[in-house]
Length: 136
Length: 136
Image 1 (cartoon, rainbow over the protein chains, first blue to last red):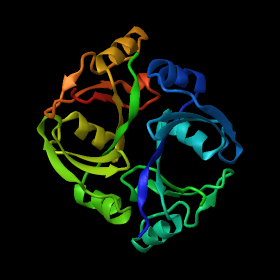
Image 2: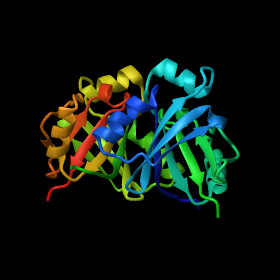
Image 3: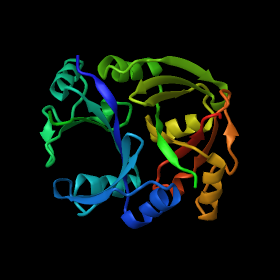
Image 4: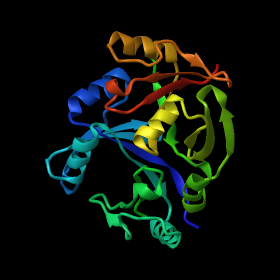
């Protein structure tokens, strides 16, 4: 059976990366590993490693994306948590068989080759959950 | 300088522990380590280890606590993230000097001896952040 290995990251939606970094980096002392434009998500993302996981600060770069609408509706805050899984297809099949609502029934593939899929918050106590599997 | 070590846990507010466990445990396969009544928080908490961190499912046990009001107002979902710090007093002093809004200016001590404090979401991009230091 597919197995969750760890919390990979926590994604926080922000309206300004610099002021967000002033709390998470200058305040809490987390390192800013790098910042990346992610056109597929219409976002700019700052990666802050912490232990074996990461905090990701996500800033929408357009006004009409899902992220931008989320930010406009709910304000800055937690967007999703991401869990690493060893077999994403097996996990998605198993969740589907349990009638869990999936945003992506098949894994998508990111530019770095990792495969990922989102579970709908309605099936996860209001939490948007991302699953991802590292390339083998 | 005080240092953040890792993500200790992610706390998710739920209205029913059994149905929540049917997703997080039966669905995702996380182990339910134990469930604990925490009268100080007027809550019942289920602890689900994942990697070196935990998912905590938090169910209010009274209708007039802060947790219960949060649940009534916003529905189930992410409540806070908890980061382990090696020196909580040093971190709180440093954050206060930066005018970060703290819910607890001095650490509180849990029944297990660990010291913890919350940072106000207004200073943390809408995220409630708990800091905690293990007993030495």
